[in-house]
Image (cartoon, rainbow, N blue to C red; front, side, top):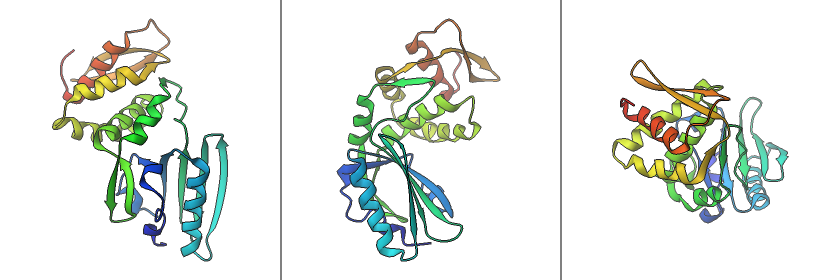
Length: 217
């Protein structure tokens, strides 16, 4: 594996933030990193130069997914590569609608982190990380069972922090596109998505947060 600590060298911490940071994932031979940035082209250029400066036989594939999303695949052997999904706007979700100002909220909720893998980088603070993971969980709960791992992060955060803060953030930044019914099942709250009569967002979020504490409705 090439020296990953070179990847973010010289890139200003206030230019970007890595979302859903997970050091265990980045120990794999193939992985991707989701990044929000104020300047898409600048970050792509700087990351590409850093990569090519230490991998003489490396190659880069750039895919313009949209005007505000570039996928940067960095190949450094026959079977290993790093994918950078770089966004200058929030990704589009089908189930949830997010205020555009949430993108700035995430970028301004960054913290400098010293990673054993990447060195000094910019990642989401614990509150923003938990909030973003909760959004991802709700968006993909019906279609991506692997997204349930996000609840582990949220659970860990709310053990020692104010869950009402995440509730307030969700209420302010998010609205539902689909209709939702929440029902009790085996001591937990399960989420069932329907094209049905809308529950109020505040009621939905409060009920969904109860899953974290395994409370009765």
